Image 1: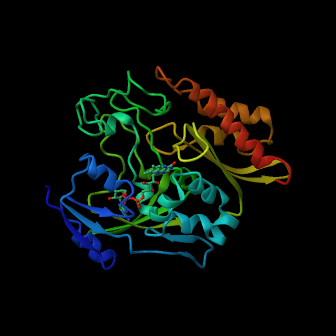
Image 2: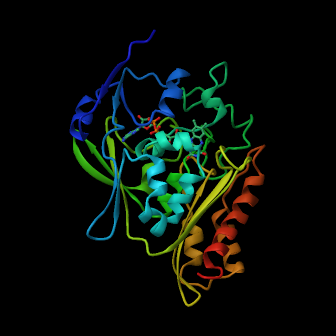
Image 3: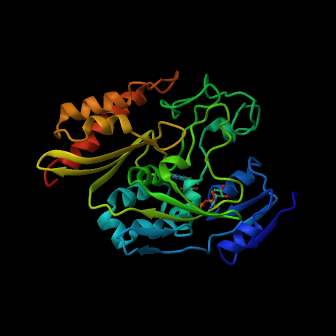
Length: 325
Ligand SMILES: Cc1cc2nc3c(=O)[nH]c(=O)nc-3n(C[C@H](O)[C@H](O)[C@H](O)COP(=O)(O)OP(=O)(O)OC[C@H]3O[C@@H](n4cnc5c(N)ncnc54)[C@H](O)[C@@H]3O)c2cc1C
């Protein structure tokens, strides 16, 4: 048996002090505990932060602060989230199951690890994320679910979170705390592309605790569409989060993010640049999707994702600019 120390943190300050080398934070445990059971993650200690920073509060500037310990179900059901940020409520409800969402925390959801089968399979598979320098069996193997954008020779895995895709489209800000102090990180900068170190997934330092997510005021129309093999309880093949503001048929502001296509939630800045300031319409939507996917690279088993992403981007933009927009 591997010895493991468990402690419940009293507050954020206590948590960062307890997060010594080899320790990991425990949120709802729905990902970390699975990985520990498979011995892919082997922390020496768990610092339980699931009871910290719970709740959603509106600030004076109209932003919403979501505590990192807030459960996914609580966010998706909150009246202000449903009213102002439907993209976020929909993304969360499109993920996992009700039981898992009841356990999963905001911080843990953002830092959940890939579902690449080779990352989980320790019976002879090679995975650079599990063991740096070992090789990547997904590249030439079963890669139907894998990346079409931003992948590297070392890793073609995708980020699995639905919630993170919506947060990227909302320009959310991650608040953190560590022994060095507090900082704020744009969610678009939190996750990294794999490069030659796919085991390093975010810019967080060891022991850096996510304390809250800030949602800037969003008087915009927004939605989330997820395409998957089953209608529930399946990770995205492709998903698109869209946020838009129209002014007499002209696109005043637009933000798009894609899930299921890259090692991080993919902010579609090329598409946004084509759309911003122009008229809403199918030709513009198709041009934007084509621009975004112009550098997409298919693996042996996932070429269908390029067309799927293209159609899903167009469908989301049509939904956002259709009747009643
Ligand atoms: C069968 C199944 C299906 C699923 N389907 C989907 C799906 O379709 N879409 C989807 O998005 N997700 C899906 N999930 C994943 C689920 O959403 C995640 O497991 C969950 O969100 C993780 O949250 P948690 O609080 O349980 O994290 P934990 O497992 O507790 O932690 C995950 C990671 O985050 C770290 N961590 C936790 N809190 C903090 C913090 N405050 N600061 C810093 N680090 C922290 C932990 O150390 C760990 O590394 C599925 C999971 C399962 C088991």
